Amino acid sequence: MGDMTTDFSRFEFQCECGCGEDEVRKLFVNKLQLARNSYGSMKINSGCRCIKHNAVVGGKPTSSHLIGWAADIAYAGSRRRFRLLKALLDAGFHRIGIGEEFIHVDDDPGKPGELIWLY
Image 1 (tube, rainbow, N blue to C red):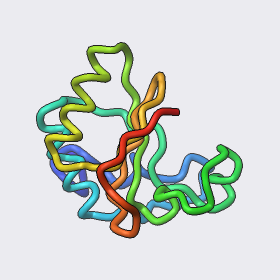
Image 2: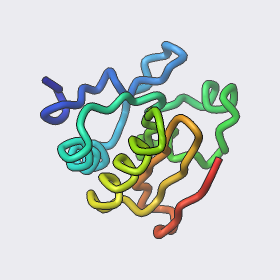
Image 3: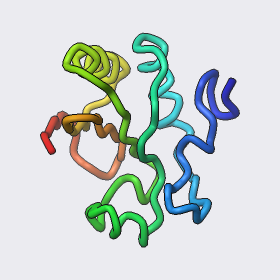
Image 4: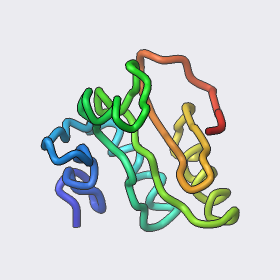
């Protein structure tokens, strides 16, 4: 049980450096829950990031992780990648980055939509 949605808890989105940054946007998590309802369990590799941690991991200075609008979700294998991508698109996400072992998704209202990129 989550404290933000049925399945998501705030701690899943905390900055990995241990600083405690966890100001993920409720609207973003609600939309992510829609994807999780069809996909199944999700592991958040990276949610919120502080400026320092974002720099350490090579994130862009304008990263949506810095303002609580993004998450990187782990997957294993091309079938799981397809299912996760479909669930995210069906949930209404329009900003998606695909890596070999994760999918970045964000819903940043200050950035253009209808984009899918590769890492």
